[in-house]
Image (cartoon, rainbow, N blue to C red; front, top):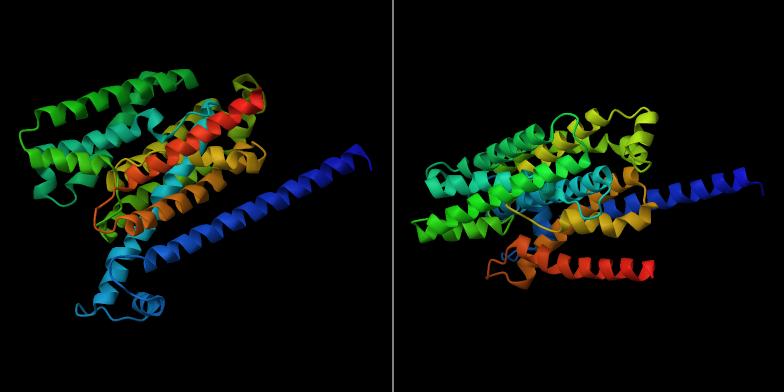
Length: 347
């Protein structure tokens, strides 16, 4: 068999494997979504859940319809949106920065959104206006990305972007710590701490309609970066020689991450490790190719957040275990394992 035929056969095998990977991840997301609708403190069977979701009446006396449609369904939808955002943003940042430690909070959007939300809690706006907290988070995320972009400049490279993001993240974190330290109301301080831990509990369709119009365009922008990220594996000069516009690529990356992560953090709080771990787990399955890692990480992130949110309800249904705490508890040991595995492969 000629070398050309061997390469074509190998490429076909990779294509089939990638198709199977996407199919498996899609089925996992679908199964986790259905399970999210079925799991909760109210004992509603599968048949009753499906009836309440598709055929039930909107009567306020029908508890199953209210629970499934107004509590579980928006929670599951937000799980998909937030998880897809974190997974895809992490993969895009790691591909652009060519840094396996890059994650969605690196460019300062998460910290800015968290600071905006904390400010609404500390000033009492969150108590006076129900949507003040997520809107404050969106405003904080937008302000953070504008500052990062201004610091990095239009011609700044990946290192400049990282340094600008770290500077904004550090400053925003310091302001949040100052808010907690000077908060005259202990209840406000407790609410800030709980919100920063991240959760999908008590979310409604209002949060879905607030986040989705920003998350979906952001996801589309990041998915457009596949060819550019593949070219960047050859370095910036190599990518430029292949016709990649580096300035446009960075603008799409920063704006896409800002829209996605800002909206996700605004409605769900800070949920860590998803954008860091998911791309690491899936990268060997896509032959280290950044463009293929984007879609697979988007699906993998959605599945992970949905499964973690189900686990929160199953492990401690009455203790209000926060989603961000569980993802960190699971993600940190998993990341340690990946570090040791990488270390052994280098020996």
